[in-house]
Structures are given as C-alpha cells and as structure tokens.
Image (tube, rainbow, N blue to C red; front, top):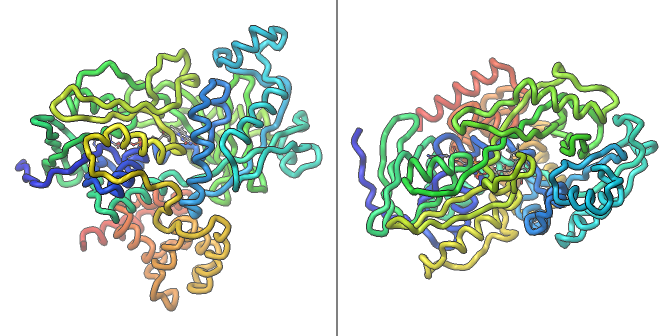
Length: 527
Ligand SMILES: Cc1cc2nc3c(=O)[nH]c(=O)nc-3n(C[C@H](O)[C@H](O)[C@H](O)COP(=O)(O)OP(=O)(O)OC[C@H]3O[C@@H](n4cnc5c(N)ncnc54)[C@H](O)[C@@H]3O)c2cc1C
C-alpha cells in the first residue's frame, strides 16, 4: 500500500494513548511543542481503563519504603481533585482491624519488625497501622481531604455488613477517579491546544536518521499506511513499551518490563453507604471493596505475573474465586461467583527491578532517555494514574534541552475540559442541568455532570423537549450524548461508549448494545 508523505516535522511523536501518552501530549502541546500521538486501538483501551480508579498515595507502599512515590501521589491527589471535580471526588476508606493480619514476608517493614520484634511473627500490629496512617495524613499537606479517625464497628453503620469479629476500624481519605475519562479529557485538551490525536492507528516502524525519526503508522480499520517525521519519539506503550523499544524503534536495551496482571470483580451493591473498605488478608495482600456506579460494588485487585503482552488479560476463575474468598473473610454475607456481574483485568507495566514477587515489584515510574540512535527517544516504564501529571512534567524535563524555546510547566490545577467548577459545586451543577432539561430525570442529569462536567450544558444546548435529545436507547442514553462522544471523544464503537466513555455497559441489554453500535456506525459513515 502507498505511503503518503507528510511534510511536517513534529517536535514529538508519542506512541500510546493511555494516561501517560495523553498526559504528556497535553502538557507538551501547552508548552508550545508540536505533537502527534498514535493509539493502536481506542484511547485508554489497555491498562488505563482497568485500574482500581483511585487517586491515592498507596498506603501499602509505605511498607515497601516507597516514600518518594507515596509523598508525590499524596500531594498530587488534591491538585487533581481541583482540576477535575466532575470525574474525581473524595472517598473515605474503612480499614477494619484484627490481630491476625499479616505482612507479606519480603516487605522491608516486615523484615525490620522480624529483626527487632521477632515475637510478632509477621503480624501487622495496630500501632504500626496507626503510624502508617499518621504518615499518610501528614506527608502530603492535605487541605480538602479530612484526616484519619477511629470507628467502633459495633455501633457505626459501616460495621453492619462486616463480620462481628472485627470490632474496630480506621477511616482515612483518598480519592476516586474515572480512569478512562481522565485519558480522553487529556486527549481532548491536547487536541484543543493543537496536538494531532489518532486512534486505531498502530505504529509499525520508527527509524532515526540525521536527527529525525521517520515513523510509519497503519490505520487499523482501513489498513492505510502513513509516514510522519518527528524530532523526538516518546514511547508510552504501557505493557508494550519493551516490545516497541526492540521491535518498532529497533533500539538495543537492557531495560525490561514486568507484566503484572490485576483483576477486579463487580457485584450488585453489597452495602448501603458511600465509603469504601480496605481489607487486609492473612497472606499480607490487601484488596478494596468500593461503591461503584451507584448500584454496584467493585472488588479488587489481584497480582499475577502475566506472560505475554498480546494475550488479552482476563480475570481467571481462580482470580474470581480468590477475590470472593478474600472479601468473604470480611462481609457477613459470603460472596460467591454467582454474585459477579462483570469482571475486568489489566496489566501493570512495571519496571523490572527483579523483585521476588509481583506484589513487591516497584510501582515507581522510570523514564529512560535513549540517545544511542541518530535521534532521541524517551521510554516510559511504570507509573500510576495518580502521578500521570507529575510523570508528564518529569518526562518533559528529560528532553527540554532539545527544545529551548519551550515554555515552563503549567498543568497544576488547570481544569480539564468540563472541570471548570469548584469541587463542592457539583450538586449545584446537577440541579442547573435538571432545570434546563427536566425530562431526562435526576439520575441521568447526575450521570451527565459526572462524565462531562460543565460541558453537559453544552451537550444539551438548544434542547427544548425530550424529542430534541434524539433517539432514546434506554437508561437515559440519548442520541445527543452519543453524537457528542463521536464528535469530541473519538467514539467509534458501542464498546468505546459503553465501557470507556461511560460504564453504561453495566446496564444495557444486548439488543440496546446492538442499537447503539448501529447508530454509531451510521453516524461515522455519514461524517
Ligand atoms: C489492576 C490495576 C489497578 C491499578 N490501580 C491503580 C489505581 O487505583 N490508581 C493508580 O494511580 N494507578 C493504578 N494502576 C496503574 C495505572 O493504571 C497504570 O500505571 C497506567 O494506566 C499506565 O498507563 P500507560 O499510559 O502507561 O499504559 P496504557 O494505558 O496501557 O497505554 C498504553 C497504550 O499504548 C498503546 N500501544 C501499544 N503499542 C502501540 C503501538 N505500536 N502503536 C500505537 N499504540 C500502541 C496501547 O494500545 C495502549 O492503549 C493500576 C493498574 C492495574 C493494572
């Protein structure tokens, strides 16, 4: 197939439309660089839609002495809340305590405790959890989020669904975030500022010569190939980062990636309040049980080495069993596989630090600038949703000497699309939307403001009656909203809309899915 020539030389060509690729695209474009980004599938189609969806410091990383990472993430939580009050919100976590809780044996904390207090025999003592939470409260300079308190589970309503052997709990703060929407909002903002964002576009080859990369892409729908030129290549391929280094950019490297699969199960709502639970297992691992999409509970995650990057991660029957059993050690009503309504799974692209277990492998991000070829490439390993903005800043700092005209960092607390309102004005915004379009009902109004923030009012602009919202596909999904996601959010299939731009996939029937798919296909053909 013919390769059309594209004369423009971009400053950056970014491979990968997960949170790291899109975060870097947004930041770099805002500093005046010209940026092109290619994603081989849909935005956030890999790890960045499969996380536990927490903006968190990572309480358990304290046991691994990952203080830098925890501190950076804790500070970042409130910066992110301010910039995206629609897709992220504060959440309280209830951590029931019992003396049977154990450390994973190879954490540095566990080793220290075994050395100085051998009689503890791997137990996680209450004073240590309290100390960890004290650090968690104070390392990151909280202003919005409340601090830790103790709960009496015998009297508190959070104790109701929990087995009565747990009498005491600690309650602390972290934040929730809609991970896949975070990605698309970064991509939208990058595009608004001038970036070229291409989805369903795979990078098949990248060759550096005379200080310039020649990048070949292939459209995954039409098969069409294109060639782009760029001064610097950013490899944000997530789980594919090593594959891209070796097989696409042809760079020889000693750096490796450790693929660690994490799975979640979703059940019908298991408890009647808006706080999440942090459960510690007797095996030293932890899981969360989180209120999800109003009517569901999200439970996860697992840590399993994943062999082949091209094998789609799935929550295996063993992982489902493990999560049910783990949660049943806490919930009064045992959870079985019959309670599961959906599962999802993702692969953590961790930097291979040769840790003994997948749980112990570092969660730090590692940025490697490669200058061995004729043009530079930046390879990104690891990272967390929580630190994506800081990772983007650190990535750009690595190559700023190539672009002396570039302006300084700017993204801290700058709203993402639809996020230009105060974090405590959310209910007011829902009320305003309901006043404009009362016929969509309070549930849909709330969902639209959660997804699109202030843009929800733009979506319904000029709508005077329900008829103006276009076809109703059920559960408050109208053609108006689909049109918006097709025009502004790169939606090309029912799955893009139902599982990544929203989670309406949890509610629609097969027939409704087909109707939505047919509508989207027709709208795209008409473009
Ligand atoms: C189970 C689990 C739970 C997690 N929970 C949390 C959490 O609660 N909080 C938190 O902060 N972090 C969490 N994380 C970590 C976080 O999700 C990841 O660090 C982050 O999503 C990685 O983003 P990424 O952009 O590097 O990778 P990805 O999102 O995987 O993006 C890489 C993209 O590159 C594309 N790509 C690859 N090769 C090519 C090519 N040749 N051409 C074009 N495109 C290509 C892929 O299609 C993919 O979309 C969790 C991770 C997992 C797995």
